[in-house]
Amino acid sequence: MLEEKRIIVTGAGSGIGRATSKLAAGYGARVLCVDLSPAVHETAAEITAAGGTAVGLEADVSDEKAVTGYVASALEAFGGIDGIYANAGVSGGGKPMLELSVEDWQRTLGVNTIGVFLAIKHTVPHFIEQGSGTIVMTASVAGLRANAGGVDYSASKAGVISMAQTVAYQLYGTGVRINAICPGIIETGMTKPAFDRARERGTEDRIGQINPTRRHGEPSEIGEMACFLLSERASYVNGQAIPVDGGLSASHPWVFPRS
Ligand SMILES: NC(=O)c1ccc[n+]([C@@H]2O[C@H](COP(=O)([O-])OP(=O)(O)OC[C@H]3O[C@@H](n4cnc5c(N)ncnc54)[C@H](O)[C@@H]3O)[C@@H](O)[C@H]2O)c1
View (cartoon, rainbow, N blue to C red):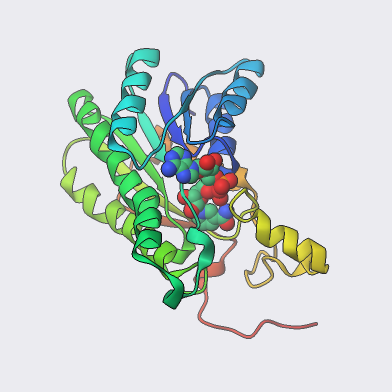
């Protein structure tokens, strides 16, 4: 599905980004794995050990110099870029609204929204020049409706959904597509504390019960959508924010059946 494609994945040191990097490599892509954490080198090593092609790079996606640096690294390593999955994100800690400081807001928006914008800004010139390219971003169901994160996190993800729509039109006629994925509850580094707490309390079986698929999702279930959107199989999908959430966002408020 991604044979010969040169793909950048951010947040590739853990969770959804790691799973997507491995899947993309399995589908034939050469992958530049980017993360703030040195764990990104493990992702690249796992891909290489499995016979794929990957390079790991430590970089902060919210720092514009680091973004131009990872774009330059991809160009140097692979001779071009065909797609980027701007996935790195932070939860913001889920603080109550009245406890949120300006610095909290700046950090959450800096990674989740501005970091994604910088990924777009510095890959799009290459995509326009070659007349093709795909951008995929990780938003969240939190960007669609309430109750999936703090105010800062939810607003940061609503911003990503807006970028899918607005940037698609700014790229009118260029051959470049942009889409966002809105994951529901996925077990990753970000949600580990919540999963650990539930396991300690013995309430693990309640996780994911408010969606009709009645379970939480796996990182690879987001990765499969990301790989599809990065590929030419999604050639007519553009400007969309696609929930991958077991059906969670399909409903009006409802009463959880306690049987
Ligand atoms: N896990 C979920 O339930 C869920 C639901 C909806 C959306 N998301 C989104 O999915 C994306 C991936 O998160 P995840 O769930 O895999 O969590 P994760 O914590 O396992 O992975 C996130 C990765 O991003 C990296 N990162 C954080 N800040 C960075 C920065 N400034 N520069 C570079 N890398 C940075 C982290 O080091 C980490 O490796 C995030 O954007 C998150 O908001 C997750």
